Length: 259
Image (cartoon, rainbow, N blue to C red; front, side, top):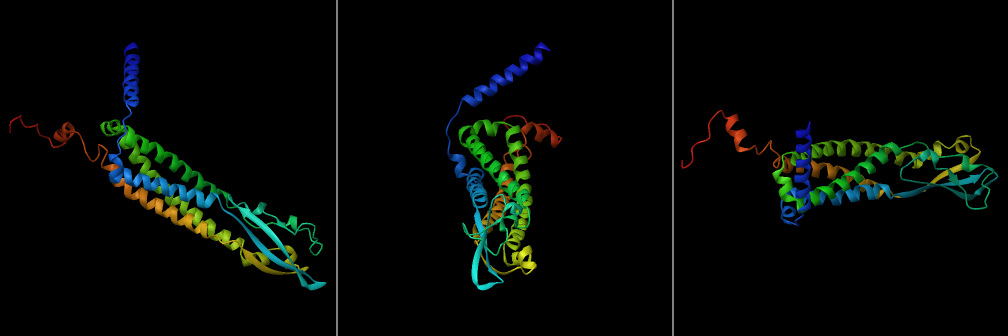
């Protein structure tokens, strides 16, 4: 028991000595491993910023049956995390539009799960890229002398590639539904319009170009992480086994020196 505690303390002490020996080395950034990690870091920023920072609105022109020439605009404001079923319609301040309580009418759909999953994952990727870059440029020898760190990096890279595919695909599907729920079809869903208590015409909806960009950056991130998996794999013991393990795997004996 005492010997095990001593070994643990010794390993912790060695790790502490290595971590304290921070040496800035920018050479890894010139290699594909570090350069692509920088691109992943930048792409993750665009991914969560273009989605998480969106604010939009959809407008409908409403006319009362008693005065069809007098159109009023009602507006529903929505944005991240896209809980459209909480976005109620608002009338111009102090204006009663056709004696309808428009605040009780909302958009249709809740797409927060896909949006929050996408943005949260992008933020975690952003933080991981910072930690990985710090390890690459500050503790280059610790990373390349260790067998576990490259392997952990490789596994994380594979998982991240898969999760980029899943999260981006889910968000792309949700975005398509959001465009439908806030577009021209909204007139066919509003109860006062269906009951013909008022005359409704679709007005406009905020351009969702930034959300389209977020989907593009999601798939770009997937490509970057998938491509970088090869360069991370080259740092692992799976690609570069030790000389001892190589000789044993070949079933031979290392040749004597001088040959």
